[in-house]
Structures are given as C-alpha cells and as structure tokens.
Length: 154
Image 1 (tube, rainbow, N blue to C red):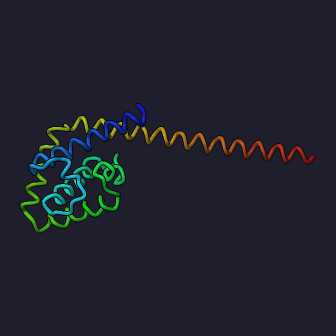
Image 2 (cartoon, rainbow, N blue to C red):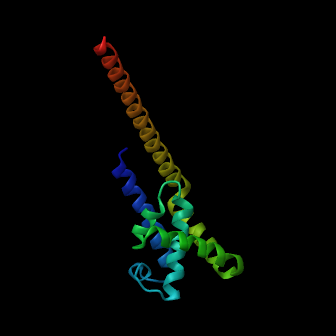
Image 3 (cartoon, rainbow, N blue to C red):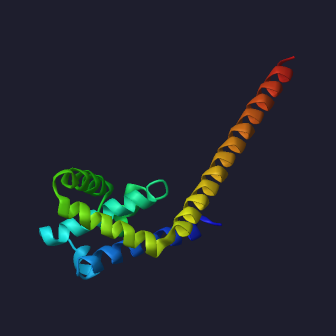
C-alpha cells in the first residue's frame, strides 16, 4: 500500500474520533475545531486530541493530529498533558473519557486499528530497506572511487 492510502485511512480514523467526541458532547464538529478558547469547546477538543494520540500515536504524529484539529503539534502535546493531569482529580472527566474510549473502540474496532498499525510497520520496513540500499550504494561508490584513485596513481 502506498503512503497516500495510509494517509487517507489515518485521516478517516482521526475524523471518526473527532465526530464521536463532538457527538458525545452534543457539539457541532465545526465549533469543536474552532479557534474558540471557551472551556465548553476546549475540553472536548483536548479530549479528541488525547484519544487520537492514544489510538494512533505509533502511526500519527502530533503534527498530523494537530493539522486535523487546526492546531500545531505543541498544542496537541499540551492537550495530552492537560487531560492526563485533569483526569487525576476529576472523576467526571474520567467517566467521559472511558465512555468515549468504549464507543470509539466499538466504532473503529480492534481489526481496523490493528490493520492501520500493520500498514505503518510495512511502511517503516520499506523506509529502513531504502536507507540500507542507499548506504550500500554509497559504500560501493566510495570503494569504486578509492580503487580508481589507487590504480590511477600507479
């Protein structure tokens, strides 16, 4: 599979999480993703980023998650940290996240998440092989250059 297929599937997974969170909090997705800093919108948005990170972190970077939330990677990292801290002292938030967690798992299914992670491993394997080939070619070129220089001087 190609990187664009990976990107499309990843984008769909993030959209599912975003829509599930917006629906859970009875918000329009557009409002949840807006620039507003109102708590009623910020917390669901942060939960959405937190859950995207939880389910897709080996696959989706914080920059990718941020782009889908109209934010930068630092905001995603802040959201993850904020939700982790708030969940320590807020049983209602823990309940919300657990309910969303259950709902997202039922929508996405473990097979879908497993397939996405498998695809990511395949892509990483291909990238490692590409780096190996590039290194091997560079070494061969260096050896050839040294041989030419060595025999060219005699």
